[in-house]
Amino acid sequence: MVKKPRNIKVDGMRLPPVAVPEIYHEAVKFNPGKEDIIIATYPKCGTTWTLQIVSLILRNGEPITNKEEFFTYVPFLELTPMEKISQMSKPRLLKTHLPFDPLKYNTEAKYIYIARHPADHIVSFYHHLRFFTMYFFQDGTLEDVLSLFMAGEGDYNDFFDHLLAAYKYRNKPNVLLLTFESMKADHRGACLKIARFLGEEYHKRLLDDDEAVLKKVTEYSSLEYMKATVNEFLKHLLNAIPSEEDQKRNPVMKKIAELVQEAKEKGITSKGMFIRKGTTGDGKVSLSGEQLDRLKEHIRERTTDSDVMSLWEDF
Image 1: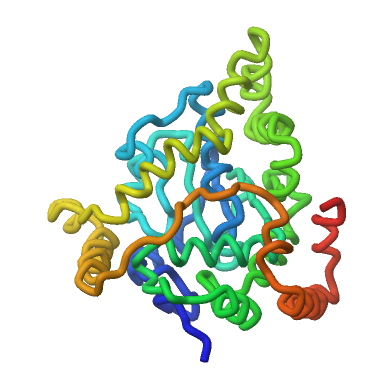
Image 2 (image 1 turned 45 degrees about the horizontal axis):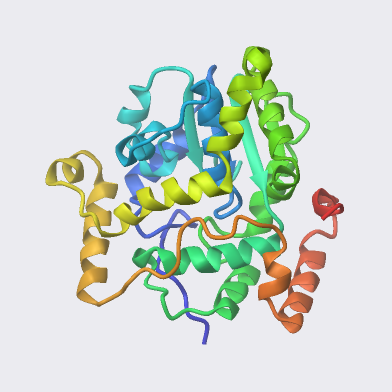
């Protein structure tokens, strides 16, 4: 029997266990506008890394250095009350795992979508589920995650439904679709490509003064730097119970408090780190030959009418 991580389902959408229906409903009604930048990904496909790069570009290479700002600078669209988002100054940088349907598309907003090879996503999501105690999946297996993937029962539903919905928008001038693998292959080039997409002024700023800002962006979005900082920020989140005031302001904080407390009472502990290897090809190493064969057949069946897998033809 396949072990399943805890989640909730709202209007047919599987969401992390901290989600609440009313905020999800606000998120799907949200219409991004001019100067809004949306980082949209399926879970464990490069969200945090891309956010780090974009925030560094917007901040002239200056990194976020404390956990409070890390958790508030870029709100999670489907986990943040709309009142808080509406109070943000422009340009607003938002992250979401919602697929392009039901996510609202607006030609005036900018969307950055990061895709990752399915095999690597599966392995990364497996470790993600064991890191966050709220999933109560510490004794789950990689086979369980593969089975959930093939059944389309992970967070935010089916991987290919999510990817194919975004792929249709890839040629829109306000949509930038990148792969995690291409970003790893050319980190510097990815930073420049993202900056140019955000606006020529950002691209120029990265290259001015002997590339001083670009050097900061690449340094502070490096795997080494992020493992040393972001992992520390996330470790705090595992055990910290939000204040009563925060719980009153955001029902998601109340859910977090309840789940953290439940995990403690059940003796559930985190396994691993949030940012681990940050590499490509882990799926080929971690999945067995038989599992890879099943995955390849599943990919073939799900992409029969699309060339989407050509995104990874060089990898």
